[in-house]
Figure 1 (cartoon, rainbow, N blue to C red):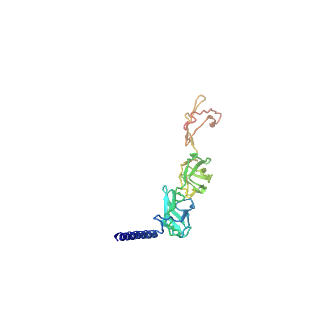
Figure 2: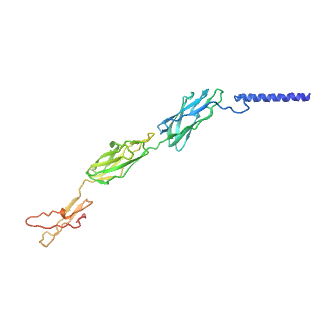
Figure 3: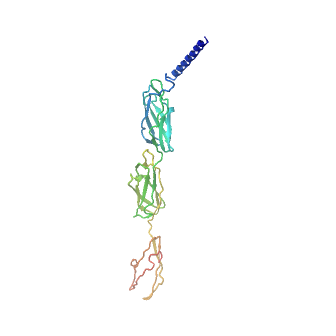
Length: 311
């Protein structure tokens, strides 16, 4: 009897244990031997449109759910994975309860790449098994660095009304350039004034030529902002002022001093000192001298030190 009673108690314990195991399995949604069931839901993150933006742009990732009985994709399911200094402040889900929601990224700063991932639990299949995670997606480019430009040195440092001086402008990182005459400002001193002409304004190396310069003084040029853009719409900044050119339309002055001897005969000489003011180059030769006579007087003229400013 004791053996039979013990057997009954043991079988009861086994029965109770099996019942508990079955209950535990049903709570987990299956009748398997303790292994977790995988979801039938498949998630695909499509390519973003566009693939590159700056701080004022936005991109949209299409998401597709397959074999989902229920979809509930929310902003909280989205993780952004940045590189470099890139960062986006907003990831917004649209149509999150459909099989084709979308995720929009915006407010992106810095420079680098960003991908997105979707956390587990955004959908369930017909057996109420939750979908797993998905990602990372294809990367988008965040570009907030504007094109740069520089103004080269003038081809001629000093010009008069008949001369010209050209500045080469160099753009870096621009996908489109549109430099016009109206974008160039001339900054003058004194009475200087010039005309300006832009050539090759749609290339990465336009030229600004100054000509027909009047007056006296200096001229520099400056270039307005937004004369070029890059692929995502960043505008080039303003540039300048450039190196100055000198506009000089005042001719050198010449003065002839008094003769060293007021009266001479056939064996005597008399010298005149000639002074040049404002001349950078002097080249006075005998052929430049005219002797003006009265009566029967005649003399020969000989220039010495003809390349100096005082001779």
